[in-house]
Length: 364
Image (cartoon, rainbow, N blue to C red; front, side, top):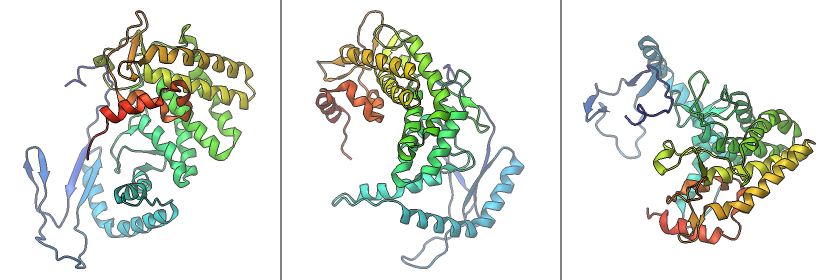
């Protein structure tokens, strides 16, 4: 209900789904969940038994989903063989982590490339939020996923992802929050923190290829968002914003006159990135402007956001009164997605770390 009453744009579409297979009885509905029971009651341990025939399909019409489900079940054996071969090959090509005493972390490291692989949309160069063909495509998710692709050498897919973000902008030129099934932009908060993640992704690709054409091709979109924020920045170096995250920022007490710690930190990183890119491409004027803005932001950042009483950054500050908002969130540190961000909190890393350990760490 809160989404229906909000200003968040939702993509409303009718989608049909079908689940089941020849090895399962008709499902029963229990507390809103579909429960399927197999005809096969028990399988002996270590026995050579075939996988149960179960498939899920989605489509825009009832006819389409019935057709997709029949095809899925018919092609399942062949697809299973192809998938097993593909993922065995992938596993052999990615780095391994050995961490004695922590097998769960070793396993996470091993399967992460496979999880990303399962969510790829090869025709456009993006990933879905999970493995399937129906789930939405999110901007932020892909931006941070893309930063990890190089860890297992998937530079070619990183190139495709950068190109998608370059060519699929919101109407105002910002990086969208997500896209529809037809690749139309949605949920843009306007130019701001998400664009820092986009520029970080471009820099990640450049750092691994040292190809200046990557920067040159993306520079028009990069300079556009930089100029827009530079034009909104005040004498402190900050810009007023409701913030890039979370979904309902006003619940945290923010308003249109807020300085938001995560966004201003991201803005600092963006300025440093544009300073470097402008220099590499010979745009000295923009490079020096970005350098000047970064210096102003850094000079005022901790004074504006750091709460000495708690030892952490306040979520936001009212630009009119200078009053800090008494909310402390882990996502405030989003700008540390880039190592550049550590410069703006220098000499306070230990205090921030202690607060995180005390308030956000949980036993599992």
